[in-house]
Length: 189
Image (cartoon, rainbow, N blue to C red; front, side, top):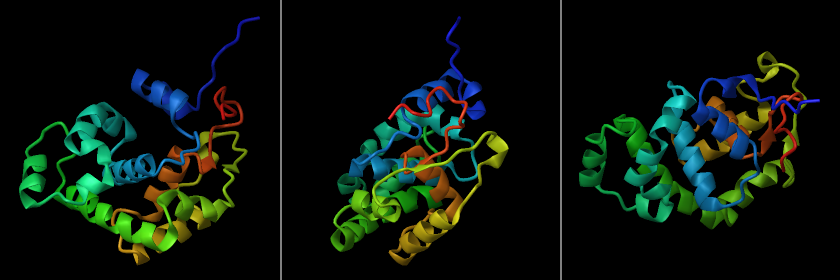
């Protein structure tokens, strides 16, 4: 009998989406730089498709110094203007400015909570939420958890961290496992 790979339906549109789904999405992340990077990328995705972000990923990472908060926090207006001239990124001034702003807020968060990893994972007692969805239509756009984290990040001064953005972020970094029950990649971690 043939072993057929079954993916979550959203990941069947392109090779980029398949690779992201199969190797990154939903795998628990504890590295602060990667958590910060994914938070910023999810914010940049607002109003766009994730496939747009994936298609620009290499250019975005190069332009934003791989979203290292220590570097991004020091961006000045000249750097922001240069970024806005780069056709390979999301050229939205509010999103670019939010990346710089959030890099600075990241250090405030770390001062109060130890790390972004500690801040985020304590909401789930350091264990991923294992949802049991059968169909894509069952997966919510936000939850009470994303509402709470979004609100707490906003209180710390973060931007582009609305509840829908945060829920997508929680899925991406494996705090929430929303691979469908039928997905071959549901239990890869």
